[in-house]
Image 1: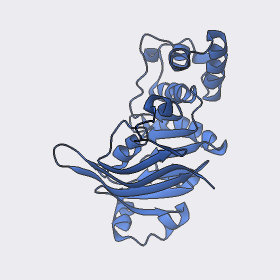
Image 2: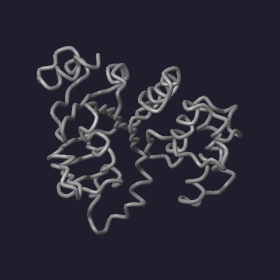
Image 3: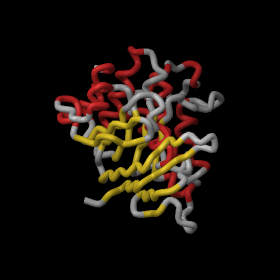
Image 4: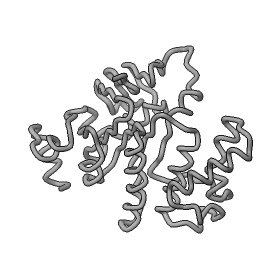
Length: 244
């Protein structure tokens, strides 16, 4: 099976000297769901953000679908269209309705016909369970609903890969489930996903592989069963004893 993401010995050092990523190597196959866990400040989100160049790297290599992200010939904006991103904050435009938020990128970036874009956006909002909320503005939506709009918006560019950066950490507990359910459906449909999260239940249920990072290093990459039931790495054991 062909790797859709290939990260090889990725290093990130911030100007203040903080070595955020240390020789991180990860391969992801098409259709695979990877969940990355670890303590705060372990480099999880930094690594995720390197996969669409929201963070640049100091050395190493990253390929997305066979394209070298750092080659001079690579059009990074075009590459980003293939990699949907959902953030911790919902980042919706407050002056646009749910439908308007989902339609924006296909209209502005992909220059598609408004009628066709509207039809697709309506169907995406239906997919995330918000067909009846398409005319609502973000301030009239709950956090969970806003995050589901954000997922629909990321899907509107028909990406091959979806990145999720702690998508439920800003939500009230009762809203977490509705967002995770949408993500579970995406996984079932075969979407390639890399998810940074604290939701261990989601990792157990949905991930093909769970990865553990600490202090900028990728220490463990294993199946959910091995990862949670028979962890051999002492640092992972310590982490799991605190979060499970």
